[in-house]
Length: 256
Image (cartoon, rainbow, N blue to C red; front, side, top):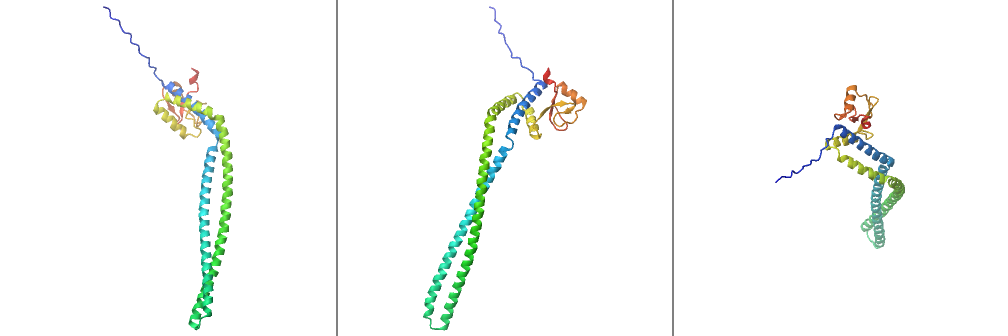
């Protein structure tokens, strides 16, 4: 009985070369650069909106504090009114009593009490003027702060409108590019991707992968030595600029 040989097939595993890795990194860089350009269109709007929101929050807190101070002043004014009223009542009482006084000692005692309560009334009136002046000043500060708050809210509404308009125009494209970026990242090894992300964060224009242009780094424009340029064209290892740390690639790599 003849044995049927089972044919075993193996999937050919493609070796990922350094050149493949560099191409993948550059393609990722192109997608990420497009995302950066979209975000540049928004400009400083998100930061301006955040600043305005912080200002509005601070102004509201300030108004609450001023209102508390105003409430304290109102309480002080009410207390002074009561003290003044009580002093007047005592003077009226002492005025009635003094008529019936028959000796100098009691007369002098009541006279001093009347004098004391009179001074108390004068002091209350003085303090009332001070409190009213503070209240008027505080009202002015509150009104001024409310006006500023109103203006900040108007500015915030305008800025939010501008950002919403820009977002509507670019949201679909940005989401598509983010998906492409995520997909591109999946084919790049973790160590290389981590280095790429770190470089992007550290350099000003966000370009982590640049080509050699006129014997110089496409990022920082410093000259690349001839031997190093030869190594870059060989695509045998990942080479970074000695000056700025960007990953260097051969501009003609995609012509093959």
